[in-house]
Length: 103
Image (cartoon, rainbow, N blue to C red):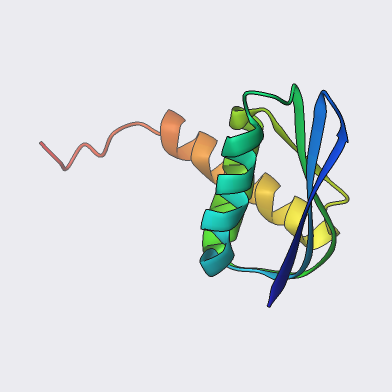
């Protein structure tokens, strides 16, 4: 279960606070909230201080947040390490030479 708390901190800032388990079933609601505020808010963030679990699909979403100008706040250390590992793997896939056995 995940509790989603949208908070407009001021006219330029919008935050989504999450409490519980962040899994793929809740991503559409989080994305909808962020997309709905994208035009009005200059600063958007997701607060993970009270997140107890993150599944693979949620991790993919969190990895893409930076490219969408969404800050991640109070990120649990295991999630930080997972994001770092995902980025390293993505970079190595992009820079690895093509397989010479495939033509």
